[in-house]
Image 1 (cartoon, one colour):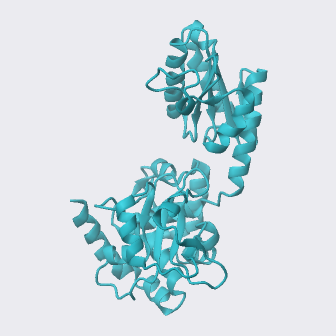
Image 2 (cartoon, rainbow, N blue to C red; image 1 turned 90 degrees about the vertical axis):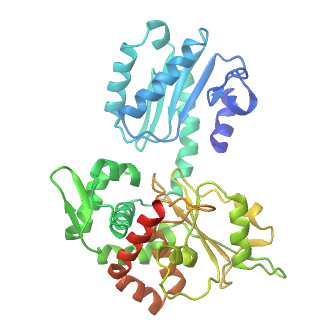
Length: 369
């Protein structure tokens, strides 16, 4: 929340977790606070619904109870709730709180078509304006997540995990119910809908898969790095560094992960390292690359990349834990291989998906034990 902190600083709000503003003695301080602690802010990057809102309000109320002279604000950067739903639930929550606490709480929620500010006060409007500028800039780099429904269903199909509740599918994909319904409709007969409001893939959605392959570089926010001039860096050495550093929210993909999922798959030696980076709230965090190898620079033009990062924008990463760096899900790995091949290998992999499926499921089951 570095950019958000810079935007809130002119309002007198500093990071209480970093600077100790208003909360130096607390074991769990708010996210931002004025120096005198009279105003403090809890930030929720993303809210899925009323349950999340209730949990955040309870936490905010407990902070306010311990600060008799302070006012607390809940700032929600993204939410699946509507403006009307937010207002109604906010009123209900304040009614069950002690008046002395409820009267000192405020809500700022950023929506696609504006902001909900309760109560309508100058200080909260200023927070909404400052945070809105940051969130608008972040949204410009976000991509269409509609493919995430297909990617989650395909991963489950490959690993034979059966059907999934549509609500849970939306949570994992990071999409609202209407967006999930639209994505499922686009998959057509490839999806089997169950009476209990669950769904599962019954066949490969070839048309949607072809669209994803065509749009993959943009959808996946691919970022590539190459060795600096005069430097020789081997993929194997990068993998060793990754195992030592263990960066958070990062999983191995490409040839390495393909061999993990299907050891019998015939693949050439890895010429590069593909990584999936979980980025549910915006652009990828690539800071770990500098610690990984100082001899890496942005790959330009036709320079063969040595390290390629792909964003996983959905709410759930679906990475498979293991000793060392996690493994990206089979669908991410297939996208990596199609990008590497761009030839008959990619076509063979796609056409052989059904045959590979059984081995992937067997491997996944064995390695989860």
